[in-house]
Length: 192
Image (tube, rainbow, N blue to C red; front, side, top):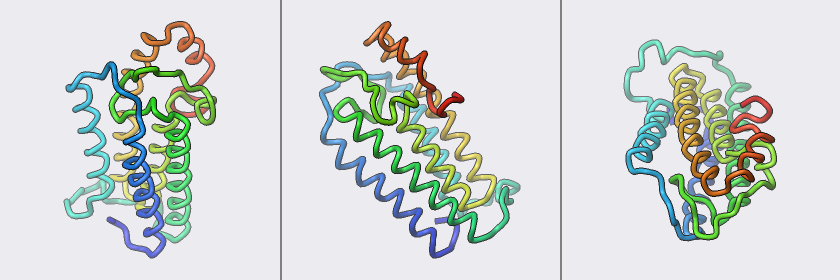
């Protein structure tokens, strides 16, 4: 980790819990009947990789991006750890509710259902919301501009992915999805 404090182990633990849960649950999905293009998927993968390199790598010289946007202090690290765990918990909750409809790529599954319960009553993409919040928490703990830039790259990547997903869901569910869309935010509750 690019920041060194005993509490940062809890941040790493949050991300490890997320990855372990994602790995285990990846085996419990429905068969895919339609998938986004390889080029679209590659763009998302590159965006996520860029964000994680920005936030986790402390070896390259980042120049002005190494300066701090919050002062050093235990309070920021603790706040960051709490926000990271909340974000991971939201993503895991949303993934659990989504069940077999989930895929890391934008897909339509066999017997796909439109999920509108749990966190999906507030936002259409709560997994993305949770992950962005978790990364924001990690960025607060790091406190450097490069970490905040990582959050922006991550957000933009998932915003673009959400547009593809919205198109797939509209084509699959038609008016039902349009009605759902009108009643919920995309990623940030009550804002966006």
